[in-house]
Length: 234
Image (cartoon, helix red, strand yellow):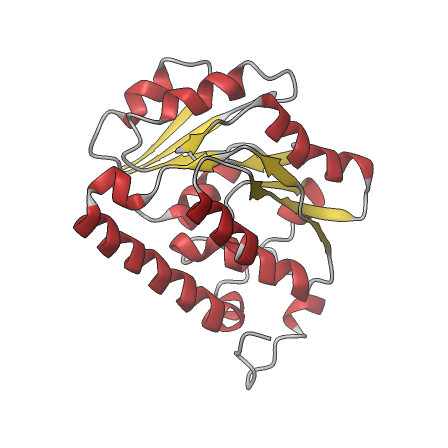
């Protein structure tokens, strides 16, 4: 799954790696209402392209993509703006799931990439990393992701904790991504980053309430852990 919003200049380098990997059997690019040629770039590769008419956010894009791929053994979520992305990073995300059936999700942590600021943020806030591998049994009990926008990674990590599931954090050596400021310029990029942080904070402080409101396939035993009077972050 590759959610993409206005990633025309960056998407191809990510797809080159994905489509040449023997470990990937199906790739879905979700164009989340892009105003550029993101979908056209994706259409040049042997991938399925899902175009959303309007921008609905990363969570909704992933939700839409998952609906097109039921029954896979493992799912990978990969960002469209990765730098120095290689086959070894795909292996690093899949191996914890393949080697230990107790691991429900792997969350990549950037190591030794080009940008020290990105690596530092990933080290201390790995809960925000979008490079993830999910076991089918985890995907099948997920709550609805539509509301979460950029908070989807926080939702996934917190939900795994609520469900008592094991999460691995493999190192992704040498990888990084393009910053919002590089994409949009300092002012627009900074504003966009603030929007992203607001969406992440909303997910962090409201994920329990939102899971109750939009349970999706959440099992009753997980819902039972979420008290009506305890919508905090714990």
